[in-house]
Each structure stands twice: as structure tokens, then as C-alpha cells.
Image (cartoon, rainbow, N blue to C red; front, top):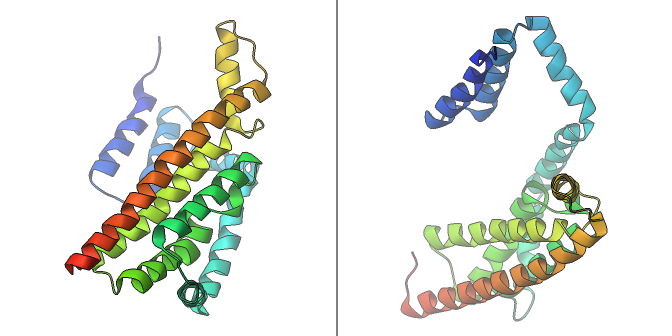
Length: 229
């Protein structure tokens, strides 16, 4: 008979997120409870955690990157990035983010996923540069509009990575698609699947590029109306 009690861990995750508790504590507590209910001892549960972490050592890179970025920001990285954009003629939020979108898609397509991202580029570089471009073009933004610029910078990174990475045939998602299709009798090489991701990537670039152009226009309209919100 199947033992469903270990699934209580899923319920704990749902409740923890619903109560807006610390996600790290919720997931850790859920894993501990699941292991104990499944008959594992405390030492065995902790050992399982350690083995998973050791098998995925790339996670430890975070602890190296974060202090470096923090130090750079402390010594004026955001201010330098903003000054650079203010010195460029014709720089706008839309143009800047479209260039970043192209960079993100191209680098993701050749497997360089970690060369950019929210912690290492969006927060310390792209978002401050986009805000500087907006301030230069439209004057000081209100809090709501500034948050929208930051959100658009983050969204641009997401779109570029999501639709660019599948062009790289050695990524896990391509392997997953290949194996799933193989179970239904469709034997396709990873390269074939990756090639079909190119039209989607081009479409995503055009659609999101149009959104960025419209966002630029909306900022101009609000500036003309004198709306700072």
C-alpha cells in the first residue's frame, strides 16, 4: 500500500507560502518533515541535504558572486553606470533595454547563461542605467514610474534568457523535450529541437521590443502631461 504521509511536506510548503513566511525556512522545514515521516533519521536527512549540495556545487558560486557585487555597488558601480548613460546622446530606456535583450538572447543561445542575470547585471547595472536614461530624457521620475522601469529591466532579462536558452542544444530543457518525444515514438536530435526554437526567439524579440518601444512612448506622454506618478 502506498504511503501518502510524506506528501504532508507539500502541504507545509503551500501553507508557508500562503502565510508569507521565509521561503528558505519553509522549504527546509518541509524537507526535514518529509524525510522524518518517510522513516529517515535526522542524520540521514542532513546527509541527503549535504549530498545534494555537493552534487550541485555550482550553487556555491552564489556565495562568491554576491560579495563581489556588493563591494562593487558600495564603491559606486551604479553611479558610474548612470553617469555613463547620461553622457550618451539619444539614450532612452527602450533603446537601452532592446540592446540588452539582444545581448541576453545571443549569449543564452550559445550557452553563456550566467554572463548576465538579475543579481549580477540587472540590479547593479541595467536598472540604474535605464533609470538614468529615463531621468535624462523625461526628468526625475516618480516612485511608481521608477518601479515600472526597474520591472521592465527585469522582464527584459527574463524574456531574453527564456527564449534564447532553448537555441543552445545542450541545455536541460532540450534534453527533457527530446526524451519526452522519444517516449511517444518521435526520435529527434537535440540540434533539430534547438533549430525550431529560433523562430520563437525571433518572435519574442520583436514582441518584447515593441513593448519596450511603447513603454518609451508612454514615458514621453507622461512627461509631456507633467504626470510624475
